[in-house]
Length: 215
Ligand code: TMP
Image (tube, rainbow, N blue to C red; front, side, top):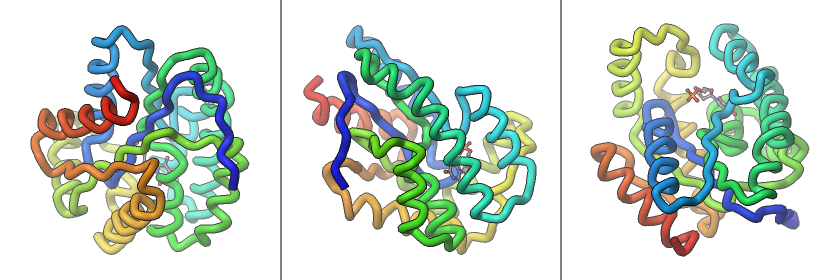
């Protein structure tokens, strides 16, 4: 499939299972990029647009079948892509996305057993075939990630949990999916050991980003 290029600025996504630290690392990367006086925007999936935030609420609170979840994520993605990601990368603002299309392949495909090729096609529709330039996989064993999530939720009072409650088998399949995707497309993916301390992980992320974009 030919890869479209509308990028004037890089498009970076963060991926990983529950409790991998994506949100923290995406924020730390944004701060680090800003110190180089490079315009940068952080968005999240599902979310950021009004539709995306509504989808986030639905998927966290109602028990949908995997195909319904996949289509909801796709709808949020199409809107985010059109309204925010493309206009920014076209006009020179780096975009960091906390989860993107690969999350649906990992969670609804490898985790939820939906057909991977069908999901890839739906992703092409949602993204107009635009892929991140760099995808950072924050890799942790699910046992570690889920344990971290429990501790975080306790301290923040977060009560909306859904995918976190699924059996360990689901989370192992999600991780296997991410590792397979990273192996298949090594030019786009970088896999980082996210079981280390957040500062060490941030340094690893930065090393790869700086090298990738010649900063
Ligand atoms: P998070 O961004 O806080 O991790 O919450 C999003 C949840 O939605 C998380 O459990 C992963 C899940 N998810 C999917 O299952 N498929 C997707 O395509 C996306 C974007 C998220």
